[in-house]
Length: 423
Image 1: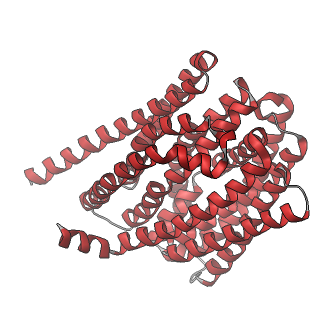
Image 2: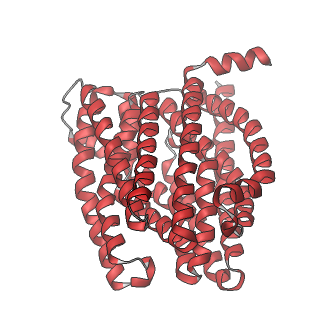
């Protein structure tokens, strides 16, 4: 068993995962430090507004990417010569799409002001940041696609350090508010984007012209990934909009902290999912893909369930120590969300197998079902049970998508094994 584990760890895929996660541990520490600065200086209500602004930017990024982020990793991992074409498309598309999404955000805020409920200055920062966020997403995925995962980790660390230094400088020079905090976040994105673009341009080896046949193929693949990613994001983040619309700013602040803390907990499965996707995309045999995914998932399961149990027992001490007693109410919501996170983490790894074996369209349906269940529970029960209804809807949605993916994989693999046996 020990020898098998040592062999497993030495594999290139696992090496990338371990390197990335060790880098992300440092990022977690740096992220917690910057989050502590922001929460303690902004307070509960302003922190809720700050988090909501970041969610709107993320929502704009999800709606504006049209699946190009998934296309970039998938196709550049298969054919590195496509890098030049994909890079050019990513830059142009992020500007055009980001501008359109920004206009839509502005119109929604005018027609339905209660949906976002932020002041004009914050709204302007959000609109400007959406194209930047899109370009950052596209280029980071290209960097991962060509195998520069460790380099991407270094850039992330350096930009996070820069963000912290700018936060401390802003506190020293003047009072930190939501506008300043968002501008600092934007500067971090821009600096990281500059270095990623510089590296990608050096790795362009062929100026590939896009054919109509390839464009159709890319568009079809990207559209499936796009719709799936939108509904996955809405299941994860739409709760904050319900809280912002129906509940108080204080409750938005408490729930925002619980959700932001959950993002750190999800970092490992997201890393594994991203790197596994890149690896599976470069493999040809579907059953070999399943075996690799299964091995990764099984080792992950043993570690992650122990990690969540420890975190549950330490959550009160950690949150009070880092953020103070003012965020004490966030603890119970964080602990409840851990139940759903367990199912979501496993699904994040397993779904990479389905995506890379031509099952993207069914995954879209699964996420749509989970999203509708999430919205229905929130709509019916949020005014009765408040944040408890919100956390319950999240758990049920995560469990549902986990079960749908697990059943699909079970059927697919059994059918595959049966065909091999018959041959």
